[in-house]
Image 1: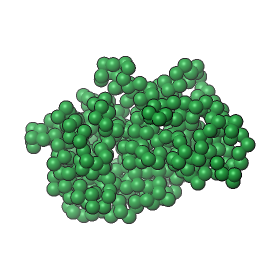
Image 2: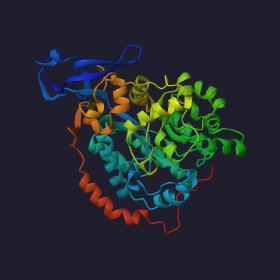
Image 3: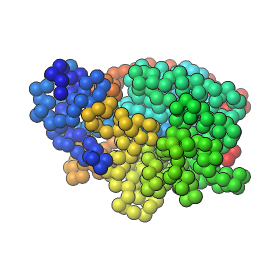
Image 4: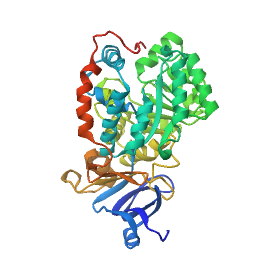
Length: 450
């Protein structure tokens, strides 16, 4: 290690690490040394005791983990939290969400993004994959607040060629922004709102410009059944015939993936991943969930997500981790699957891979970006600790995250947000809500008909 002062040393904690076989392990009484936004060493607390550092965090009783990744969300939709409750999917879209989204302004998106980033930082999320409108504004918020993000400007075929062009312009214009903390993707909405011709054009643009693609597909079984009845193919088969499975592809939800889709997903020529957001599936009463076990068996990473707070009411990836483990046990009828250690793997390294950042984040190791969260396990609900992995997944809560670090910069310390002013955001958002939620105009941005 260098003799000059480190930028940050976190010491006295238990560190979650991945061993040579990518299994979850824990190093006790450890320290993490950070320099220029990168982890220089994971060592013992004793070895780091005399090392000089610009900033030092004493973390006794806490677990240091890789920052969580929200692999699919619509961050500005926190402004619609609780607005469309207890509705089937079609009514949720057509009667509430898409009419309200026709009112969206850049300022609404900015305020929603600020509130969402504050919620995620407090919940230990250091990176999120967002798929929405006015994404230049979201990129500005990410740059300012210090998070990491994978962003795509959503587009529909109903917008004509200009929608796809805007998605491309955003992706090219913001790729590598915020000192490399922003990565970008093309973001067609879904096979049921984007034509085969436009999906094919998107795949061609992705290959030509070296861009990944982030979209919804096979969200639920009804979509798959409708696609089969109308077109004779599943949504995944649409992705294959339009060339999207030849790109680096992030598929949101995938609860409608069926057996005949698996061979296609197993032999994709790009990096294909799926994001699962189980809380929303329960709220919409969808009959199935993402087939995590089958996808894992064919080598497709499954990252954890929340979807937007308009459907999920929360951006709590910690809850997604626990629900994924529990729902998988119930769905598979096997208490040995999904184990706490497997759930932690999905929450860390697999989620990083899902958003194309598996080489830089997702594990606490030398050479990785210093995206670190500290989880306090001294509360009564986390004691005693017989199995640390189980305590983290099934006993700890997002509110137990004490400190959040991205690229070596402390964004929250001892539960105090350092880069966002929540009361100011909430006050301004509240003043804008009447105009935002007005549906008397009768417009909607799209029609949900799968």
